[in-house]
Length: 180
Image (cartoon, rainbow, N blue to C red):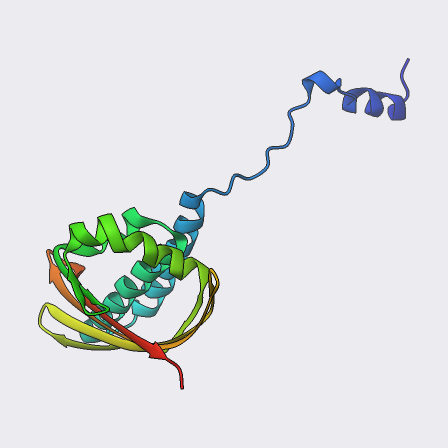
């Protein structure tokens, strides 16, 4: 007859081939992007919960700009492109690109840069007229990109339009210069 202690041990013994190995979490690019974007979305929704209609729209515009930049920093081109209107115009470094040219060219470089170099952005100021908004901000970017030292001051202007209740980026203008 088993005493209580032996019975307890007998029930807890398992053979090694019956054990289920602990699974380690898998961190993929998708999971990182989802975490970043989810955090931005939750913060925006909580902030917008008690806001007026005007304030809610301004918060939504800020969220689109934030999520677009988070997608660039996460290297998630699909998420970044999803916030751009089909007829978006992107102005940077003296050039003008449409969505297709940006997707096939400059986007990859922007994602590499956003991942490699720290950027501190100031507050996003938003102006609204009906279903059109423009958001502007300044930033300081410092770090290394390859063998190049980066220490720049930037400005960004993003124009958005609300179509069927969804804000989409219609135009982006980026400019930067070496910090003085």
